[in-house]
Image 1 (spheres, rainbow, N blue to C red):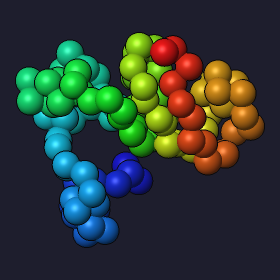
Image 2: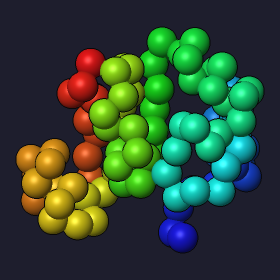
Image 3: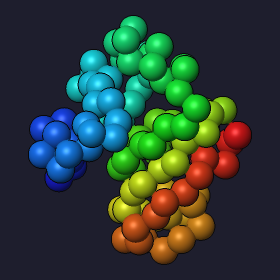
Length: 97
């Protein structure tokens, strides 16, 4: 996949500002029931979640939680759902809250 990985977060110094935690699953998006107990606890207690990638949007957009999605709309279905053209960079607050 052409996505960022945990080592990228450390390489850019993100750990100085945030906790870097694996979700414990190898799915493309965050499939909550497949994630580790540690991740689920952190997720439940988080005031705000930043979710990168279209797969995370697909998996989490129905969650009743304050989630900011950072993604590129790579297909018509997701672009239409968000209300932007395909191949656009998007930062979108979850509309399910």
